[in-house]
Length: 122
Image 1 (cartoon, one colour):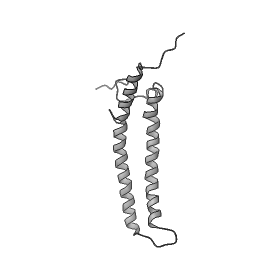
Image 2: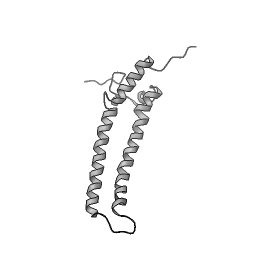
Image 3: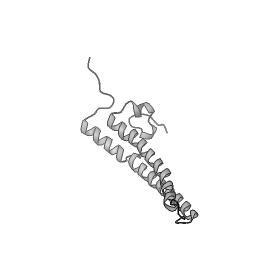
Image 4: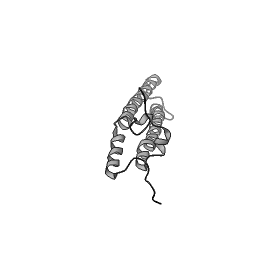
């Protein structure tokens, strides 16, 4: 089986040039920028949720509210739940035929855009 890298290839096998240089601002924003922001947001959740849990069970100048082992289990469980939800959201947004693909196709159809960059008249 041969995989051709072109306009009919799935998004995940396209080259870097096709993903960054041959798309319009709308497609690049949805496919690249929003995906990076999504990743940074998930990283923030994975870091700050356990830290916030630590602050909630160990208040300043007071005895711990819960046993530390219970809080550790809850922190691991919270990170697992965030990870599973992030994977499902990622697949829904950027998977083949996902929300981004549908919106980019709708935007292309509405704008009547042709394949490739616009030509410049001499």
